[in-house]
Image 1 (cartoon, rainbow, N blue to C red):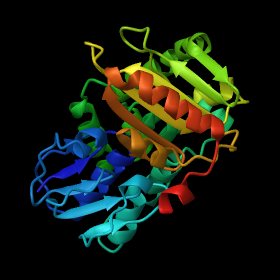
Image 2 (cartoon, rainbow, N blue to C red):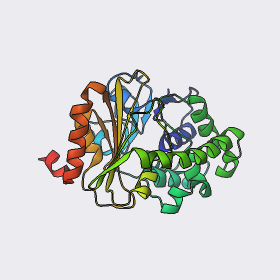
Image 3 (spheres, helix red, strand yellow):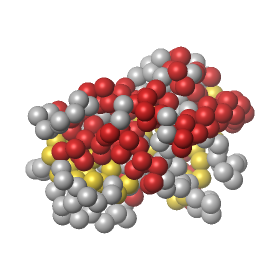
Image 4 (cartoon, rainbow, N blue to C red):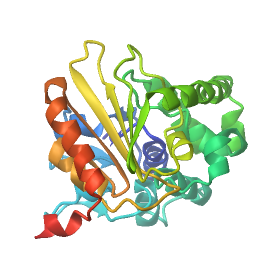
Length: 302
């Protein structure tokens, strides 16, 4: 039996909870949703999938993404919720020996991007927000660190986890990176009416930082599109789309839109990865949909 989840803060908390419920000895299998969607992940019949698209071979499935909903019977639980962790927490509420309610509330807040401006600009003042920013799911796997956080959050309170030398160093690095990232965002973001487009393809190694900073820098934007190369050979492109958390005027269901471009996600945020040869077709179409700013949910139902 394995826990199969994605490397973000919600996935970390999902793993914490599932380890507490089940007698699982194997390490977490960290997976990107796009890889699972495209059949590049081998799922075993005893696997528990959380915070990822459904695979019929798994034993249990827990998820909350709008575009991952299915219409077939399955074991586990699915609902639209701030986090997948909260679904697991409620599903097994009588089987936890430790009170994880604070951790689950943090997962809800972080995965639903329910941040104040101060939390975005000064994450170092907020323990869970700061820790979540060290959980990056970039191009290089970081399994040892993700597993360390799972183990730490199972045993200790957040302050103790943040005292770990590796965690403390990463937090400091994040603060420093954010200062540099602000400059890169200003230089590489174009505001097209109410859509801000951050194109990081010129960089050999794209700069990283707090993904919500762009909303504070471009307050007139309803939504941001971030574009980068996914691999060193520049053959694949990753596009991340997110509604502004400070200017909530975007009417497009982002995850549903990106499902038409080999991706998916939530109403408010999602991502896709595709061959670079498709960029001239996909990217202008994505931006055009966001510029029209029409509710696309009724169209899909019809």
